[in-house]
Image (tube, helix red, strand yellow):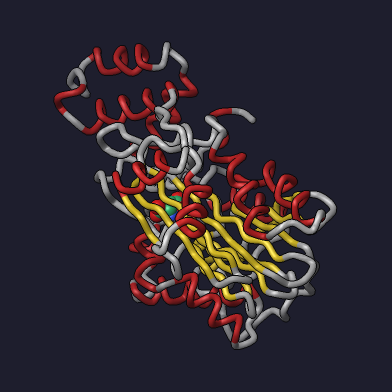
Length: 383
Ligand code: ASP
């Protein structure tokens, strides 16, 4: 897949009409144009199908791997970890694993979590450097220790002890973007921004490639986020989930988002379903989004409506002020025990220009993208 199209970045300059036509393409949204979705107007719980595996849109090409395991009667946690490992290994996905965009010091720091529904066990790791497959590492924490969460250098050392290979996670692509970010944000790392040398400096970093320069300028202006949550239910109704990420680009070293937080970026109750999230993790942590979604589904809400309720709590934290909410993006994804699924996005648009927010679903035939239900039927950004 093409390198530059994969990165999710926050969108500020799209006109509504571009996104509105993209919306038609993808099947539209259910929200009410500029205000929160009317929660009284709930969709019926969608018919489920098992086995089922879903993820954020960047997992579209990886879901086959998980579905193969589910079809052979394999374990749901093995299925979701196998799927996200494909994305962690992919240097072209700069939101996860190898090739993830680094922290402000140029170090890639990864977060991940797993939950195994049938045995009610969980594992997670945060701020891990130099270990590529952190979803598998989180699973190893779950299987081999009496802990749930290990962070920082302790997690790296645990990984080495368990036979994980140490690697440099920074690709040439992410190193150059990081250098460009440093050049833009620090006087020390660039010629004067208004000087003729600035353009030359950017051209030198990217060998004159205008597409890469434009991309770098976008992600520098709007530090991107990106992640893959993945959840599965098998033919028997057993459920597992994982979330793995390089977190917020240019973060302060040691910053941890929602992805490794059990009950926020990842939540499973084998009697109910599973939930995950992408986007600004800080907002999710404040409302324990994953747990909220599970409890809403327990009360009978569809996966989509449960995701919308979590979104409503985030919006309420900002008194539904769209200007403030427009400074970030966030998605929730959920499945229930019957194999029904849904996702909600704060804004109608995805991170990429001209695309509607979407997620990836595989229910046995083939993996496909489906539209998220938008909480605000409007384009996010600095409005
Ligand atoms: N939620 C992740 C975090 O806050 C990042 C993302 O999904 O984009 O670390």
